[in-house]
Length: 224
Image 1 (tube, one colour):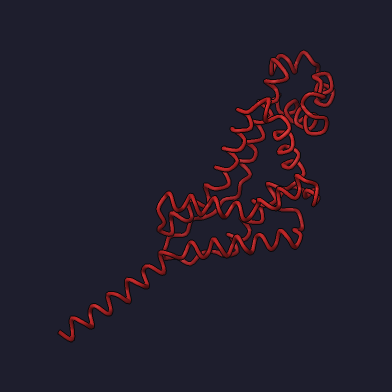
Image 2: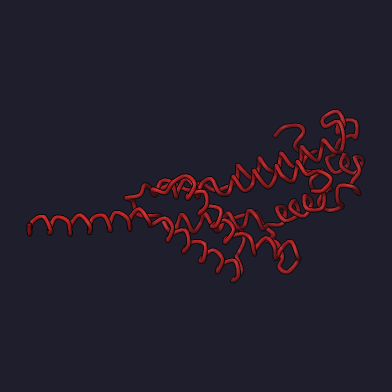
């Protein structure tokens, strides 16, 4: 752990709990069990500290996105692996710390649009990349693979995130992978999984269609 990490975690907690404007460097120093001078020496200003918090959170998210082995088009997909991937991805976006960070950036987005854009772009890319790789491995073009990846992520996380952001459902309290999912999220996972499997099958269907066409052509040649 870097020396600055406790400061970043303390600042993140303070910003989420009190808002950026209502959080003081004194409070952050106390939370981090250090001095205000140390906080300023490491980050220069509260604005720079916020940017570091966002970058640190993005890096942690990217490291936490589960792996997904992109099976080649001829191989059978591992449904259990994909289902587990979907469960973890949903929890990564809806557990307590993630919802707190999203609320923070929504509140401060107008003042720090570059941070909001960075967070949205990097988080979306991290979620979509494994899915896009899977679709491409199944024979889809890069553009179509990315499109299906975006739709899958949206089906999986959009309602779950919005409900928590609006307070309609509670954020998951434990780390991703350690929560019992509710019925609404289970249904979202099932729908996203069905969509994913349907879109990952074109290569197989195309191969079957080509095989039938070849067979019919062969019969015609034999009859000629």
